[in-house]
Structure formats: C-alpha cells, structure tokens
Length: 114
Image (cartoon, rainbow, N blue to C red; front, side):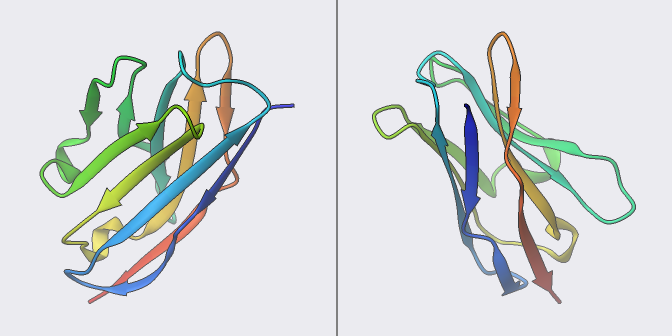
C-alpha cells in the first residue's frame, strides 16, 4: 500500500522559514512526478511545486524565488524549503506522487502570522 507522510509544518512569523518533508513508502518513487500542493481555508487546492524524475521543477508564480522543491530518490523523500514566508502562504500542504496513479498525503498545516 502506497503511503505519503508529511512533516515539518508549524506556526512561524512573516519572513521566517520552514522545511517540509514527505516520506513515501509502498513503492519506489524514482520515476514518479512528486510535488506539493496547498489548500487554504475557503480556497481550492493549488499547485505549489512539482519535480519530475529528471529533477525538473515547476513552481507556482506566487512562490517562485522563495520556495525550493527537491527530492532524494535513495530515501524515497521529497522536500519543500520555504523561505520568506508570508501570511498568504498559510494553508495545509499536501504531498503528491504520480505516475499511472495519483497518491496524496494527509497534509501538514503551515500557519504564517503577521
């Protein structure tokens, strides 16, 4: 059974940093597209960043230059380094893995206070 487990969320102040991690189990994710999405209260879930098997990353315009996605295939993990956090980054962040099927984590909450 494929499982994705996020960690690293929390409460921070504007301008601070957080690093999210997602550990995958149940399959080898080397050839999967991995990513992070987020959902703020009252909003739809939106893409934050994805990284394909070759390491090519795509970012939402709102996080470009502040967030960095990376992956460690040996550990079956994907990370999201978030710098210069803003209150509008407050959301539940979800880990994603996709190839033929899509898999989602349970989410980790990030709250950025002003």
